[in-house]
Length: 482
Image (cartoon, rainbow, N blue to C red; front, side, top):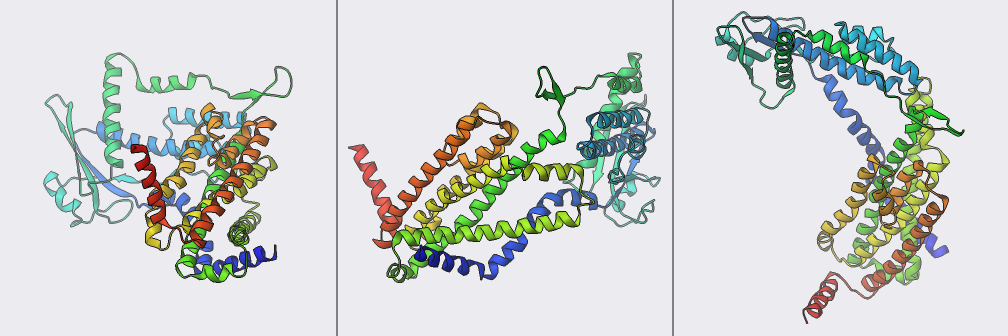
């Protein structure tokens, strides 16, 4: 044990004293957080832009303005639904019905939120596009769109982002709508115009049929709500499904993704470290002091300590942030954290991490022992990428339906078991199945470690490498042809 500990300590200190480790420790959570928040931050930080409508009538401009406001209202409705998800389902339905009724009466997004008594944290998204009056004719549009002419409006002096030129026939019917803009990529305003034209066409059809579009919209309010329930503890009892019921499934998905990230962010150290030691002939010195099995076990233990340091640091930072914001935490976030720290999820998560780490770590150690240089390791990148991405793809598929029979069957495939076992935990699988998964992971991990030790001995001690592997498969192909 002392030899294993000395090797593990050497591996751990070798990585933890490198500046790249601390850089990754700090930047990884920041990068993940930024990746989650960046899309919404960019969308909300995008400045409002001016557009103009050149038309002989006002119906297209009005329809476009209503469509853009409807888009804001839909986004505000989603935010309201998320904010109310952790509360009473009945209160949430009442608020959403009030929001929809206000919208049917013609209220904008802000007024509809006020009618629904929305929390102060829920505000409508800012307007992305603002209409301005344009009376300078079509011939002056190109200069304004190129920014050569400043346009005065409610947001100050800005350049004109886009313009719509509506072409009509003699009867006043719209024949075409031309979209003028120097931005050939952005499609938000152009798609809104398509929606406005479609609404105008529907209004024309409804008008000819003697129907009023507002009456058609109000008809949606008469649709009865669909209430999701799940069976309760008593006979015939059923309780309404709340966010707290969905939180374990969301937490299991987050833990499975975190497990994948942790495993494959540390096992790469085993590959590169082994290649470096073999190319620099450090193995000769190490094997004069420790046995090969002790060296292998020490390397696995050292990188496992490294991953524990990463997890411990990120967990402490998350707990500190939670304590600092405890009074401001959204109830939904609190319920999610409670589900993520439930022992019924943490137990399979920890078991899956240890088994998955040992399993994949043994594979990467074996691969590293067969390579003399980084160039040889690059030849293994394609199968390694497939090995890394297959569990992630299965996790993404299992998130949609963790109770699927396909997911249940794939959970018996050892390389996928650590991840899918976590995702299936909220579905309350039978105890025998959970125990069988644990036995399967232990058995397959032991087999992977045994095979890795054999390959490690052949590569690190006896000098076998990629040429020997190629010759081995070549002999198999030759034998098959015979």
